[in-house]
Length: 118
Image (cartoon, rainbow, N blue to C red; front, top):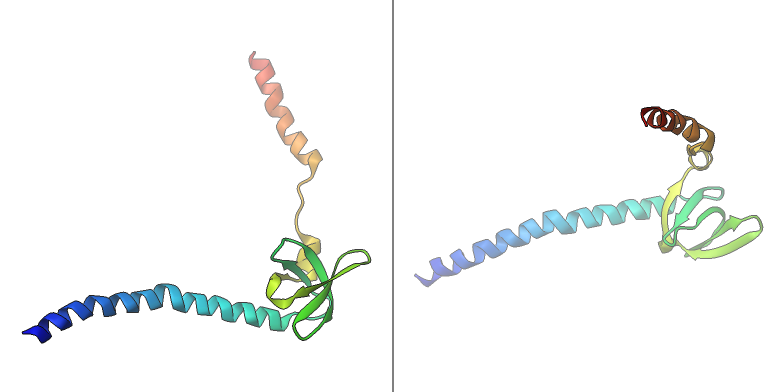
């Protein structure tokens, strides 16, 4: 009789462990593996973003760190683990920036319509 009660108590615990593994442990390992692959793929000339939010171009690859240039002539040594993401040089240069003139043109007719109504 006690064995049936013991199995009945351990079954919910086992289900909880399986759910915990599939919802937390596996996805975390997958993200860690992707981050390690990204770090291994970084080469000289790549644009990276650090965990602190700095954008820089990789100038040299060391064993445990990168030398990145964050401004003209400003080079810093950063641990590999502090690199958040890698951007291709094309993406960094081609990121769309809103033009002030277009925004002003779009808002102007709206302002004129409200003046006409008053």
